[in-house]
Length: 309
Ligand SMILES: [Fe+2]
Image 1 (cartoon, rainbow, N blue to C red):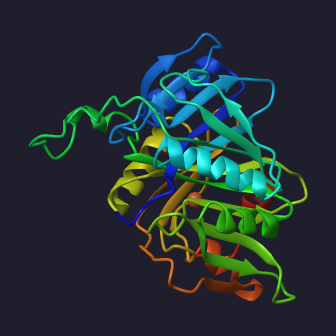
Image 2 (image 1 turned 135 degrees about the horizontal axis):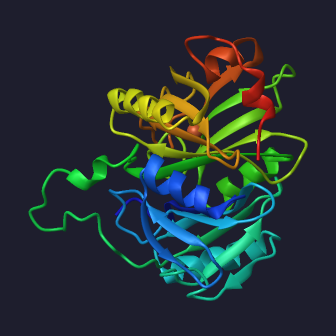
């Protein structure tokens, strides 16, 4: 088996300002499946084609944003090894006991230089995608409810010191840089896209003065046609669309950015290329930053840079 260590994004815990509105939005409009509620009042969701218990957890709070973003790792021994590697690297880690989140094993929690809380875990209860693992059908008719992405795919986080974040993700967690946007000095990265797989990104960061901010959590769709369908559903449901449907230069994905009722940006996207760790990072310069982000308009919108939660 070639893929090991950190396997993939596991879950995002997102703060919403009105829980009922959040449940309606994530359940009926985005079309995730609710899988549980806990004693703290958190509500758990998964995308239809995900097998693990939950990939989005929402909780009510006074301020929107992201509590933490978690990655699933290969095994408990990998989790222990990564914890000791993080400590040896000088990162303070904290073990969160199994069961603190529904159906989720013990988690290793730490803060990165951008101010974000990152977590690792090895175990999460399996609820399946409704198709089974033996002679399955091709898709689940129930999955047509709402936008119905197939999985929670990645997030983009805004904060300072992203070169330190990149070093930690590369040197300790085994990620590699797939693309980056370089500032006018031709040295300093404005933005980095990092992968632990063959996806064009599993997590991305943009340099920003305020630590710990969320730009978006992203959800995968099967096709450009489904991106268009998602835009139709956003309009029907009066969802605030930030931009799109359009295409990114970075990763080549087709995309829409929009906001949940609390102002957390989310993305629904399709496509993007596959990559491997031996391929050098693609570099974008500031004179083409517009095309890097929005390939058709070739210019950035102020909201894309300024609005975060
Ligand atoms: Fe994205």
